[in-house]
Length: 87
Image (cartoon, rainbow, N blue to C red; front, side, top):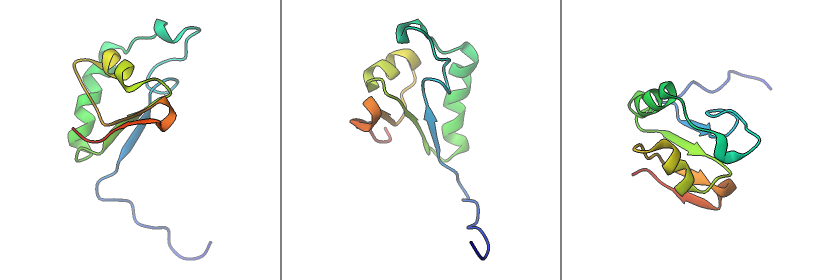
């Protein structure tokens, strides 16, 4: 590839994978729970990225919401079969 790489965006977007990235992988999906630190950090990311933060998962969006309550984020669930845009 020749030339300069494209410039870094002024406001990056974050697409955060739920299981295995935000949460540890467990033998049973129901055994995981977000840490207090994660619960405190996630709501801070939206303002830092101009609202461009989404959670992606193989889980249903309702389950993501339950685990991250009271916070709700734009999300893609069931490997993209469900989608919720910005609230």
